[in-house]
Image 1 (tube, helix red, strand yellow):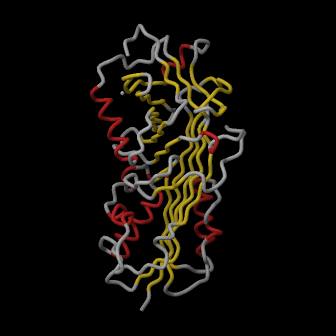
Image 2 (cartoon, one colour; image 1 turned 90 degrees about the vertical axis):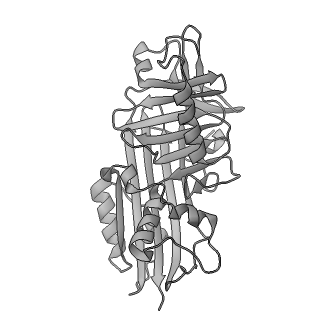
Image 3 (tube, one colour; image 1 turned 60 degrees about the vertical axis):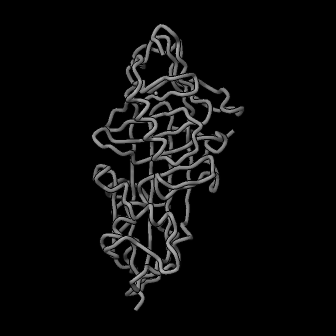
Length: 326
């Protein structure tokens, strides 16, 4: 896959939900923390979570449970709930090793001091798939003024590669979207847009334009595709949750965190995300024209399973230097 190092932590913001608003240009969402929150809400609190001293917007968004495990295949996630004991860390580590052959980026950051009244909810979401056919490596060119590595289809590429690209719409040289086919039950959507609204709005906007588009949807022999390689690792602690007591209960949230590791190059996609929360119980052009699908400016990536209606991953790319090593 990719050879360059990941971006430094803190450059890309992890959002708790697709509805979350932020002024940060580069941001990412994965459904992992929502999986954890859903179990906390349904199995522990048994109600929408509220705080007596005022409930943050993010909590109200999480309470809506807009993403659940029904939106992703069971084989692609693992979750655990139980008391924090001396054995809990090993139980989770062995489980993710057995199911995904993965190690954790998050377990060492958890306070494992055991307590009869301390519990953990953990989840890992893992995806690893190849494109229908590897795209060509196109070398370096500019992304918003910065040099970056790209892959895709140009005039020299095999015509077979076009079969791996489905045009959603092409409304103008700055407003278009495509879907990249994979060998598995996943789709990669790429939407050229500078929209800064939340991911749920951008995703709905993309689907609306797709529905309205009456142009050619096959990737033609005069069309070209250019997509930058992406690789990053990011982690976040949701500090606005730590130390908060759930209204009407004796439950106090201790730690809440999430990690995202993502790679996309000419061959395919790799995604690993973890989330954990500990808590205590206290007492869219004519086909004869060339179209250039160059994702060389701000764009958004969505990952979705084919039979599902909602994506499980969203990424906005604005500053390519955060995603590629120069």
